[in-house]
Length: 368
Image 1 (tube, one colour):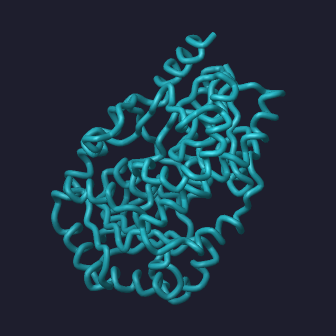
Image 2 (cartoon, rainbow, N blue to C red):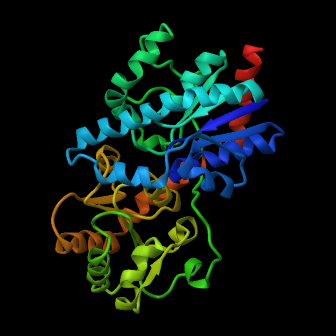
Image 3 (spheres, rainbow, N blue to C red):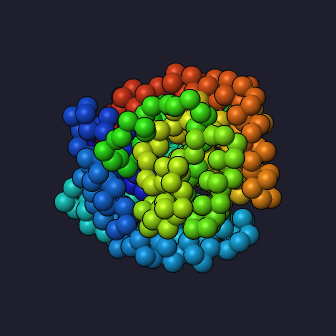
């Protein structure tokens, strides 16, 4: 069996899809993973063959993110539109690939546009594997106008649905209106680096991890956030790309600042503060660590679910005083960790990727 994975247009989907892709490969099947130019190094870093489906570069992605509309609804439309544009642009390249390496099955990510279009052209089954808990259907309105001409040429009035829908959301946090799907265990993944003992050991003080890469935690904001949380008596660790970390490292001599493999660090944390990204959210839940989502850059529906469940706090506006108060609450009330650990145990009981391989094999056999 030959399986083509097309996770998405940023590094995080690559790491989210890697466990299933690796399980398929370990079962003796051939696997390729496609991505835009920017993410090809991430694909090869997890030991999978990488296929370029579009020449979109990191600089182009950065320019798009910099021009993102402020309105959340318009943000969703903008992301859906660019994913659809990449889907349309990559189709010919993928059909050329299929002339030489014809997949028996294609697995696509949350913005599920490239995978089903290719599967329809080739007459093969398709699978949708969600990256996280965020409902990606909110991006569809922006994609619709871009996809309409291609769908019309194919005689379709909508993007074909998958033959199998895989969902990694813990059942307790799954929305009541969620589409029926086969559950699959989510496994944390991120770029790695040589480990230092402090990354996997816990000291005497509570440990608070702050993610970087957002407007809130970059530059001066990064320094001020770390100093503010430090007043709570916590050990602060800040995850940041080196170009940002270098700006503030000398000003924070008592803080670990830089890139840290979160799958390693998370189990040692007492609170994880972040911007609402799906990878950090899922890694926190997997480790059973309470979350503080501050000034989210993504739709807050998924965040409100864990807040309502009692495993997180949300600060949508306000300054460091509000964020400190929320962090202090999470550190002081053990019920937040208890609820987060309940979700962690639930995630651990979901079917692992290795069990899903048989479902994929049955899909292919059914089309033979």
